[in-house]
Amino acid sequence: MTNRLPQWMLRDLSLPRLRRYVRAAHGDARAAERLYWWNIEVSGTLLGPLHCLELALRNALHNVLARHHGRPDWWAVAPLNERGRKLVDDARRSCTRRLPRTTPDDMVAELSFGFWVSLLSSGYDRQLWVPVLHSAFPHYRGRRDRLYRDLTSLVLLRNRVMHHEPVHHRHLAADHDTIYRVLGYLSPELAKEAQAMDRFPTVLADRADALGGTRPPRF
Image 1: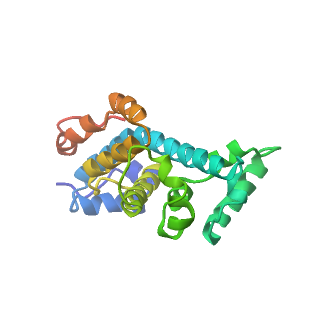
Image 2: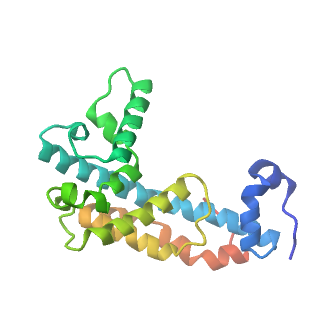
Image 3: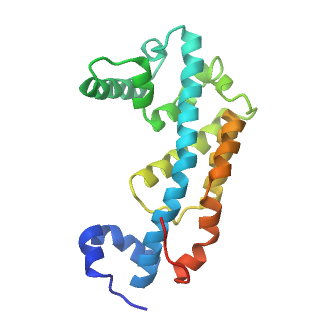
């Protein structure tokens, strides 16, 4: 066991970031280093499935809401709560700063994963879920609250992956299953296509070897 990380890691990656891995490795700096690289590796394998889920979700919700309200900028008339209106306003300002003219498609792309998932929360049950949003999930027959819990957990996972945070401590196999279960509610075809390209099962199966140092890390 060694309790010293290389100086270049401390300089380039920062001690506050690395300290969490040292704690997880019970003070073994060499094990912490391997855990850090494996965390990057496994995070990379989750990007593709999360990409597919986020785009499929926002397009499905946007399409049914646009049809229901009879306009592509449905957020202008939908019964959004205060937080929802703020997120729309923030997205509009962001688009305006970058684009000479903002289209509904620009807004759809700018609105965050968290915004789309928030439309499935309990506050929108009667206003959006019952009359409209349930139809965005043609292969789901369960309760709204279960779907919302699954997606809320995936928002947290997505944010940790995108902000280079630790995910190694999560039940990643369950997270991965949840991604494909929810994606299957939206589009079984996309779920099947994504799974055919997915490296996550192999990387997860190799975790012990990677952390034990019997195989080198790879991105």
